[in-house]
Figure 1 (cartoon, rainbow, N blue to C red):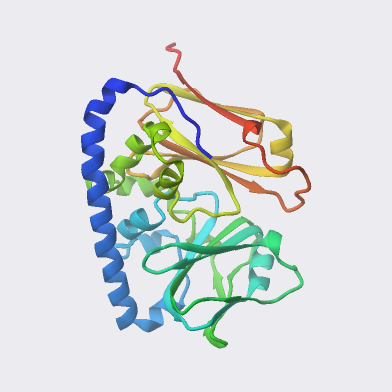
Figure 2 (figure 1 turned 45 degrees about the horizontal axis):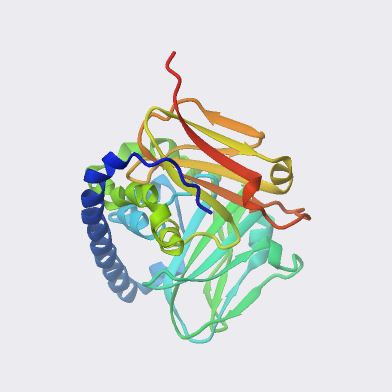
Length: 319
């Protein structure tokens, strides 16, 4: 779901050429890193069968941060995130969903092709019989990766066991909550001109989205977005205020998460919105926003309506 804002047309004179170079740079780096990941998976087969949890420890590994910024570049600071793969599948994939049910009130697992990162399916708590211990999927032969997100997690957190073609691939994996999500506050300290160049074009893309194919814009902005979520997204400008207005029916039936990113696509502001009007008085730098909207566990209402939420950018009032 997109939301258009007034475009400063003169700014596009220098934004568009720079964005074009950034777009080429992004695609080149992504191809290179996917090639290296494929080679690594072929050489170190054991490493692909262990969940990698987004954490400070993970980000210290070589090339991990660049790989994230070209694969799932819209960070989700509201959830515990983990990835698995790439691995080969001949016929089927089974996931031990009972661990997910016990670990979080709300969760989803995305299945993606590799190296294309095309979304095959998102398994979510809404679509399962909660008494089932495993869920099995029939897949075409190929390489796949998994992306897991836990919202409203429990005190004890387990990542699920996986079976590939009826064979055990990985066991249930216990994680320490103290080891995850503590990296977010210091994430922007890792910012670098390299990361800014990678995602520089996204700001311009969103500025121009009303003239571009919407599906293409969404794919560039949310290449691995959860298909069970609704999304609002757009640009934010330095020295502007950011205001969200929400109808009660949306608050009552959905969890609403806001993230504002800098031009390197690193999160600088994030929160769960729980009131009908939420305002950031002054945005301190250019960037872009993403509102994730997830149905609550006890969701029983009409289908989501786009007019349940409105977003406005206004010049900040100087005191």
